[in-house]
Length: 111
Ligand code: AMP
Ligand code: ZN
Image: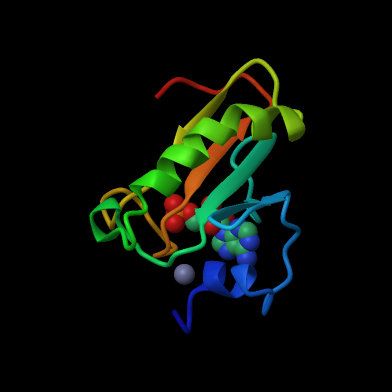
């Protein structure tokens, strides 16, 4: 996707430290953190919504969740965390490339 910031970070057209990367997804710090620790897990395939998944990405999403406990430890997130996937306009999605927010490093407010 030509004008997608996360595709550009994936392709290293824009620099952003990748805290984790494999063939399927990568992890960066959110540029505007909403908690003491705020990371984004981003599948390498570009699609906006869960329903738009390409190449059976549900396996990638499963792998992301399965790898998250290990990655969160590596990132020094202790005592739990919150994950959020904003979907579409009502969900407050700003970047149209699916991503999982990982928030932690402090006691988060309840919804
Ligand atoms: P969402 O509203 O769920 O689409 O979340 C998009 C997130 O991407 C926001 O929390 C932004 O702060 C974050 N973001 C936007 N541009 C960048 C960037 N260049 N590097 C890291 N995070 C970014
Ligand atoms: Zn993209």
